[in-house]
Image (cartoon, rainbow, N blue to C red; front, side, top):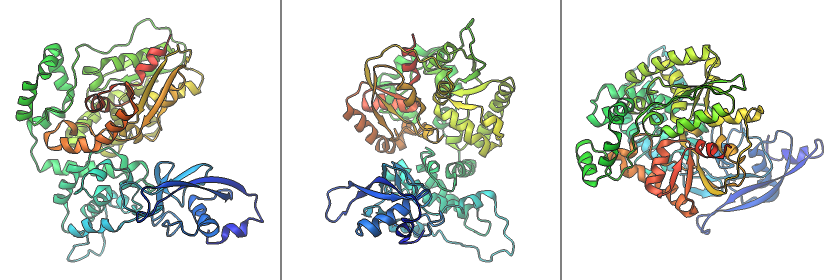
Length: 539
């Protein structure tokens, strides 16, 4: 669609009028951005970029925005559309859309952002082709081909919590450029040293993948490279222990009461800080003994069979979430069993120990397949465990790649919401008069299923979901414990803590145990899994 096309089509096709809100901001004269409403004529299948061009040509020629090819190739038209980064050229226009510039980049004016600052890190590390003699035939690995799909739209930078806070961190865009040369068979430098420094600052939240228009999946590729880095460096006692939560849980759970009271003492935390470099200000999880088991003799009223994945945190630190999950499933007529195969391997992946992670993936996948063949759906309340099984296992370890297997792995909230849509969920809830907030974890957003528990919570009479929070908590698995990364964790998580405190709520619901710990420690507000509220509402 070229300039002027909107006017030519007015007489030939039925027109609708849509209202859109566009961020207007001139840093030279304005204190801050404001949203201005425009009424645009909409042609069937009209795109957001076509609407912006219409506003520019027909209504307000002072509007500034960027675009190039209009065919998803150049990435210049990336903006925030209803709060999420996306390409304006491929997004169909809808009524009441809100259009804003990408986050974490300087705004030139309105929707246009300044990209010039990205050139400096590229120059600094010499990200150019470096082979002395180019081979006649270059058989590139699949990772290189995937990385080359990047069209430099910078949506990944807009989503990245670490890029916003870490001055010396180039963000996923810079990482893609480093990784391109790392996998390029024509390049002689291999860039492993620079990649090691880069990956130390990546918090592995997977948000760079969420809105990528070409599905580059940089987080998966960076995990592979982190595995190569791990082979060339040793592992500290602290990192060895942190990557084995199931082992630590078994050792500590037998003396859990003594251990919990011990680590609450400041003197003990100082010793742990010195010996293991676990920051004494960081939250420390409580441990509990006992197994998570389904109840016996429950009447089954549906054909559904569920194997509930008991994660390490469920097993040793928060058994109430597991028990509540099983209770809600059983109370809705589901044949439920506890699936406890040990750690999913996420801590190994975070460390870069892919060999150990592969062993866990193979062991878990073997047991998981048996259950699926027996007719069970796999359901996880832990967003990290769910994301690992759905994304890391297929890409990193060639496990669970089949569609018929992947389609049987669910997030708990998503599974319950699908039951509700099928008319199989008992929603005769009792009234709960309370104001609560909900925080959407990064690994839930990475699964691209929305926030199903938000929909479920709105079915509870009297419950007011007073606020939803979309910011990263900064815990990032084990990063928030580590002495050398604690300050970065705080810088990433402080905006969320400040926002929560400003809402003056006494309970925040979150699907992620790490986020719950961080919210309790930093915002000083109680936080539990949303299944707890669903369980309380059941008669």
